[in-house]
Length: 472
Image (cartoon, rainbow, N blue to C red; front, side, top):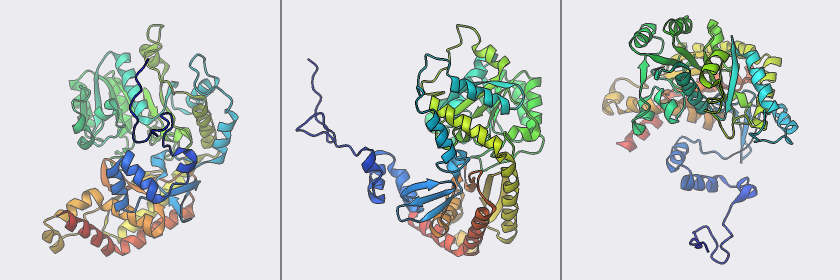
């Protein structure tokens, strides 16, 4: 007879099969204090402290479209948009209705050629540029990148990858290996060998790398999101494409954040009429209601990688291509096309950028405004010069490099009920990435809120000085 394990703290001593569980109903009614306490105890205490410090520990209880509501009834504008995973805002009713239509389908049944998976692959092929026609479905952007790296290696028989400084492709081991910020890479070394880094936008450096190594692929984002929304020089992507073909190297474009209308085209590579060999998608593909990613390739690359009985099942995923996820993907593509949301993103993005550039002319705190479509970065300059900088031995400006954008985001949230955040690989850049269904009036509200904060810059400096003083 198996030995009964000891009773744990959460297990009733009177009945070993009874546990102290919260359950769904109680979880939906947790207070801000209780949920914060549980998060700190069981999830990430440091993150909880950070969120509290900048006022981001709200208890949001409902959301619809671009609006989010907390437990006090206050309404917030979401200009973070799930890092691009909310193309239609929160809880889009039409996408959820699509899920209901598929509710009776077996969600995870691998012993079938899924009709919904096949249809989604077809519809993706219809909107993807060029001959990108074969899709593997997964659950996230990092998974999509992992799939692309594996496909490039097996298809080419080569092992070296060229990636860019500042790049962000995810935090799994392979994706991290081709990322561009040491902070996230160093603790996990040694990473995958054979990864060569070149500056983003430097075509000569890329050519030198391709000349010196037998490269399986070059992987890059058409616009670097987490680096601070870095738009490369015009024509750069086309030059990259030409170089990879000249050196018999595959081109992987990570469009996890830029794809599906975000930059004002269905895919950002279309701005330069570039077609990669492999493309990575996720975020918006699930319509904001399901986790869904895809690695799409040309049939030629797919055949080299997985053609034939011995290789067809070398890359699989238990949850990839589930019925509900595919239903969400099908509805998402239809909505993007029918409502022409890429064009709307192009027009509203230019309107937003123009307003931000006008603010830059008036306020020195804004160092640069960058973006394409509704993927926009606002970079802040060092907040002080002269005596205060000297009195703090430069500490206030060092602090600003990592946290000034967070202070602005905190004030936007606390004083104006606008949700934003900084970019992971350049924390001095605040991202503005609202759902594609945003309106001009909502954009105007955020522009006015930013002007209000920047015109009262002393308040931000007091906050920064307070934190620096406490740290010292």
